[in-house]
Image (cartoon, rainbow, N blue to C red; front, side, top):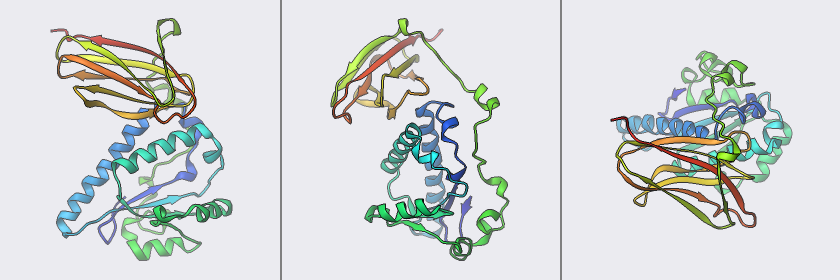
Length: 280
């Protein structure tokens, strides 16, 4: 939304409008993580700019609106797991960014649950009552809030949520590689499997495709002990994972499949890896 009257960056998350069943099949888990990183890094840029002007440390204020909330958001386990994974990643990458988390329009059952889990790590969380609009306007200013939150800005700036339209789904890039063309590797609990790939020429394109038999797997690409593709926890229940990087240097790249977080179960990975050398 921009800055409030105190210089804090304001966010509104209309969680109540989310339709998890249509979202989980609309893209890859890594796309969600990358989009969240862009969003958080954009917030960091705004904060740093405003901090330089005001000469003090600032942060972000997040308004979580549960209006229209359906328990499908919680009880659709795959979607909940994916969202939780992305949230934990953002907390690791951008610690102490949010100085206040407001929850508004919370149904009674959710309200009770939030009070039960409120701990020291959630000191920034505040559940507002029926006067939440007045509270937000008083603390942050009407000029920076949308009308649905008691402010003066148009609600058109808010994300609409809801079911993902078929037209949007039709534009999503999809890749499918037949099972007979995939290589299988088993990653035991608490284990990491590295798949080394030799790249002969600079600027070659390294691409990958894989599915995980159940649960999720941590995936990254490493070159000379440095991550060249960040580690994301990937579930492929609804969409296979695929992507590519351009290799700046020749040498051996390692694709890492980590099941370090798994305590009991093996994970079966079915993958395909290609190296495309530059035309010239």
